[in-house]
Amino acid sequence: MLKQRSSIEEWERELITSLYPALRRIAAVAGSFDVEPDDLVQEALMHTLRKGPLSDLDNPLAFLRKTIVNLASNQRRSLSRRRKALSRLSLEESRWPTYPTDIEAILDLPPRQRAILYLVEVEDVPYAEAAEQLGMTTAAARMLANRARKSARAALGVARG
Amino acid sequence: MPRWGWPVADFETKLHWLSERGNPVGAEELIERIEAEMAGDPLVVVTKRREGTIMTKTQQPPTSNQPRRHRGPIWAVAAFVAILAVAGIYLAFPGDEPDIAGTPGTLDDPVATATAFLEAYTSGDVDTAAAFLAADAHFEAMRLADTASFSGDFSDLGVEGLSLIARFDEAVGMTWLPGPCELQSSTSAGSNVVCPYDFHGFHSDERGLGPYSGSAYRITIQDGMITSFIDVPSPSPEDETAWVEESWDAFNAWGRETHPQDWATLDNEEATASLITSSPDQAIEMYERLMQGFVEFENQGS
Image (cartoon, each protein chain N blue to C red):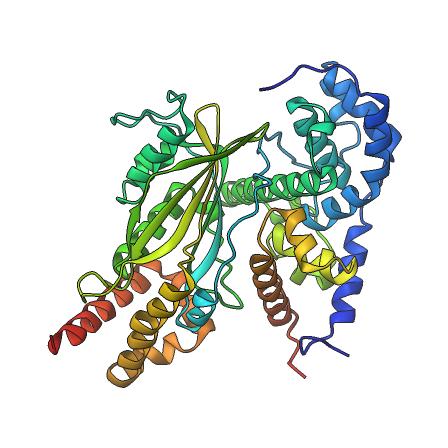
């Protein structure tokens, strides 16, 4: 049930402050390049707080990271739809933000693949823990990560060696 | 040293750079923005968005914290045939009310909702099944290809993606036999329902084999609508072995010998992925044709 809240408790402020850097990083990785990571974090927090206090959550970091990645996935779909629609209307490509070509291979990956790769490769989070944070099984996390590596490798044109 | 045969360090650098992108507002200001939004000041929500941002407000519920069942190696074994995939499908459904006993959004009992949904889903009634899913419901199905370039992401296809899965299921002779659903837990994110099921694959029913048991659907329901649906076939270890040997291995052994031209594609995951993504109708026709030949061959000696 949704709860109407108008303020954030002090202990929730402290919790959000402590989680903010980690939440922002996963939002930056999983989110579309033309969406500010802070917007994703804010959206995830609003969504969660509307449902109740953060104390309801067994693992707030995992829950919020999962929510952020879900939101990023939805936004990716929405952005894609909108671009396709505008493309059909022959609007110029240049209307859309651009990003450095050397990270296109990563940005082309689905948000969850980006997120799992970031957690295990950069933050050195074990697969089991990363899987929990993204709401999937360890086996699924390994499979997604392997798929992401293969896709990125192919896109980067890097030969096995 | 590269751990997977490619320069991971370079990839790590890119990921790290990506994680630092944007203009952080800091936790304090973020909390202010959230409180302002709680207070109903919509202007604050967009003050920090960059020019060009086209973020949309969504109400995507997070998936359940409930751990999902481990997938066995079966689908990995089948990967080279390129019909297995993780399909992360986020569908925006119109919410049409189907003409059936369990009308979406009107059933108070989550088990009844899950049961009515599965009745439609497993019978290939895509439109009815779609009507049970909340807007932006998380729909994950494991099917089709696990390849380098085919992620199985049908996100942009909406109901058509659901239909595509149903057509592939029919083409390769998958039959789903759901059992009674059970309420597993209830959280603020919704009621988590588990529905065990058996399945026939590659027309195993017509070949006197199967069904293969031990799998379960994972369904989360909130306010009478399904917010998360996980469809990952994962039979018991014994049935998994039987399923692989009796279906995948047998199908491949038959096909490589009798249809080398088709298997030149099927043994090349990139070529198969390209076929599935660019010409799904052609891919479905191919699998349907091959599967019919396989079943006829299997039944010749019986």
